Image (cartoon, rainbow, N blue to C red; front, side):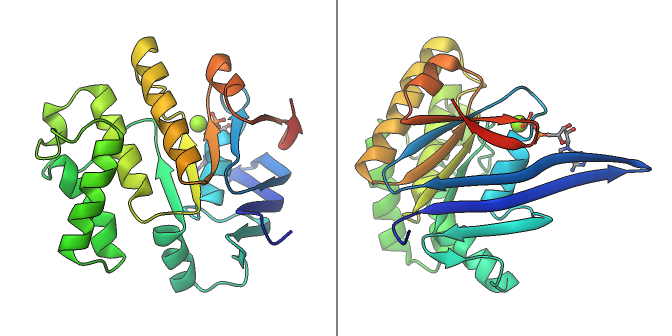
Length: 226
Ligand code: ADP
Ligand code: MG
């Protein structure tokens, strides 16, 4: 289907240490449409992060095909993979990974500079995104001056800075207290829906998973629908 934003087909990944071999992903298939938010669940160690890193082009699969916004990745060069990662994909981690020496706004501008955008445009986009997560007054603060929830909002704004087609998130509110997690997760869902992104979000929290459009569970290296 041409409309699919993210398609994973037959994704395999094993880790070998010494004589032991761990088959973490044994043929993962998943297709996500624009505007669809999918919860990725499964016990700790089931391979959620591995799958997200592969879908996010941060790691390579041993086998399988990835299509992002219509582009087949297996035939892409390293330069094309990097370009796709920068422009078509946004990634949010459990820990914000903001650069401490830069302001919140600058953290949202940096990926735009890397994608070739000019300062004025990048600044306007950062201001717009920070306003959408309720941080319009906090853009000049460095991450160390922000609360955990605010830091994660900046990380979400940064992930969306280059208008990706696909948002990948690995326990994005897993480091926040319950109340803050609820609020930040609601904002994340709202942004993803407004921009009609496809999203794959790993979570341990069944309440959050239930609020997404669909739940897929990693079990014995494959995805099963909930
Ligand atoms: P989850 O995110 O669901 O907790 P992970 O994807 O982090 O699971 O890990 C899945 C399994 O793969 C775990 O057993 C983990 O120890 C193993 N693993 C992950 N990355 C590596 C690696 N780089 N080298 C060896 N083993 C790894
Ligand atoms: Mg993980």
